[in-house]
Image 1 (spheres, helix red, strand yellow):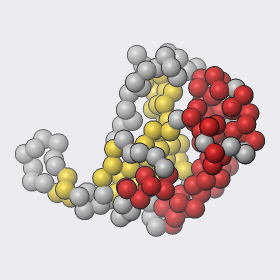
Image 2: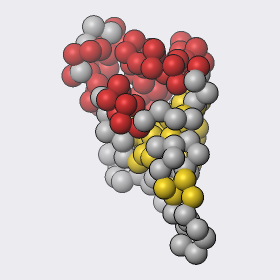
Image 3: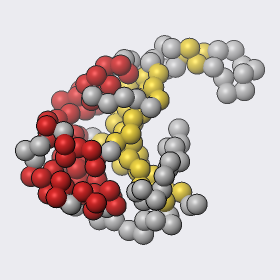
Image 4: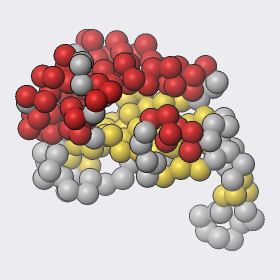
Length: 167
């Protein structure tokens, strides 16, 4: 599934989304655990219509959950307020909105401190977790990924997927 187009590329040169695939986990549980609303989800076994509408209906073979990540909102989240990186981000909020490196750093720290048990559970049960990064090629020219950030994503088994869009 392709990441969706940026709704307002001038507000940020990138968009982050969390995608979870799992053999059977209820997407409602994922939303509840992450305290995030899914933008798109379905459960394994739910009816699946064919794209053409001509083929007979089948069922989804796995559960799927996709939700938007907005690190700029997290500095006000009391669950991560004591994190030193979040304190720095609060002081530099405009930078977080424009810097992919900072946004990914906040995602990594938030996942590690708050959602690591769920993410590890998903992986141990045969699921996959990825962060989709949609970049506007006209607004973003480069970014840096700090070693600590890549280590956290690696430890949690989170894949980074990049989609470049031109406008």
